[in-house]
Image (cartoon, rainbow over all chains, first blue to last red; front, top):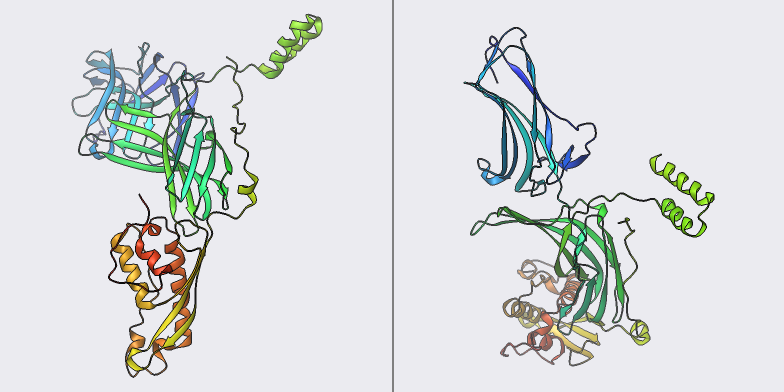
Length: 333
Length: 162
């Protein structure tokens, strides 16, 4: 900030070329609030304009260069001074000199690699941003524009179910099953708990989703556990041979994809915790890791469009043609 | 690829045996502490309680049992469990040392209301403890609940293989 009222100062502004059309995504800020940011994927080009507006028209602005950077960095909260930049691109917009009037500079970062998903957690933050700088002798003028990056995956080839028998010898034997080991963020966990032996007095059973954020390496490793969801699946005492179904819709919860050893700095992993509680409030639990992944949005063909295509196969007439037209109108409407 | 609605149909389950569904549950365990009786005179006076157990758990040798125990037996059991097992043992009802001070007036620890309070606390304590899978492994618990008398010189051991 300039303390001198004389001399020239400027405002700097970064605007994306596709600001009108690009989708925005909600992302949590460090203080827990949700904000919307432009959404980018790996490989997409980031292009736009930097507007440098002189505050006092007529006066010159001396500078040591104007540049724009695209940065992807990991910030560990307990080590705030150190930012680990895993993506760092820079474009020089102007050589050192003088500006006599407000100017706009174009920039383009072509097919930028964005290997990781944006993440704001309890001890770590991974973010991407554009930073425009007017370099000056005493103090630079900078402006940052945060963006959000999502990493997409395709349906895993192998997605085995999780099925296990666990228990306490002679007291409690259960077999639990979850239909998959890898779930996308809008998926449904379908499963069941089968009771083989019940010699304790169970009061109810719930399934919890636990997020574990791990930061640091070697001797100083921090684990932050956060229970994202608690979902009661049984109220009352089960007996041998009884099966309790599980149907848990993930879309209702605030989840991120599983992140394993990101840039060797942190991990975010998810666990299903099956908890049985007996009449004396004793808790028996079994934790199981699941992998969460983000599915890309697919262009949806409406059902009526599909039905229209199907009918055309058999009728091949004006009727089906108009059905297709109608479906197309519904889609765009 | 068209977006499909997730398949949320229930997983296949084995049909339940009707005997299992409608028969008696395998977790039946009931413990009553009742019938307080004060015996002895003067300094040797003390109260005993009937500890009655009904169960179908195979870990208990007798499916029905009834023994008499005094407060210091409960204290012994609690100390044994704390030392021998990894169980977080619930507290006993109070020792009431103040009631035992001389010149207090009233019947002290032999007052009906106090005995009833203590009886309730002892019953709660036993029900909490006897249902704990780890406590059920301890010889001291079985001796306390089902043996004629408590042998404080017993050798601690586990009743069930880990």
